[in-house]
Length: 267
Image 1 (cartoon, rainbow, N blue to C red):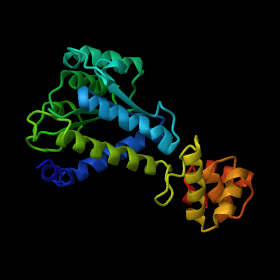
Image 2: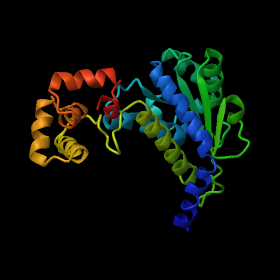
Image 3: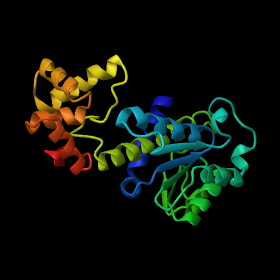
Image 4: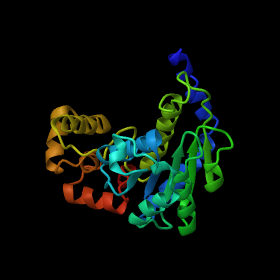
């Protein structure tokens, strides 16, 4: 029964693709102006935002300040519920002020119910400072939609376990956040073809993956890819440009700088 219910989630998300795309464009614009993508939520919604933000760092090699997740009650709320935190609008304002929120940022408020006061308070403050705002909820005509420039309303319907929004609602939120963060990273040059070329090879597994990406992107054998990986200082993008443009390390680095990190433009 749960499996059958879960299959409905992508279909209801499909109805919201146009607004998801628009929010993604705004996030890309934020990044290009030095702004950030900030998720704000409570409970499951807050945890999903923090998860997506945290995974952007190793996947795309970005600073942890570029995509940020805020949860009502702070870090301790990741593990244990903080009573009353989600009911405070002021708490959200304080959290955003601590980040020095500005007009270049994009703020996405996440609430399955669509009425969490913490999220509403955050969206209201974000609009005051001129940031782009979007509301992600799992109900049509949700309260938080009234407090954002863009509304993503993924109506997932009743849960198998009544009221347990970590099920279909949580799955829907995860899928939407995946789209927004991944597509926005593509929009600022963190991907070449379908490869995570800005991945940080911080362990043996990721180093092997990095070398395979070089081989896949360029068509060279694994030994050659490993050699260029080493000569590029472990930088996948640089190695790819060195091979495909047949240029030395210094010129590959310069080309990437001129191309703002887009491998295709550097070539």
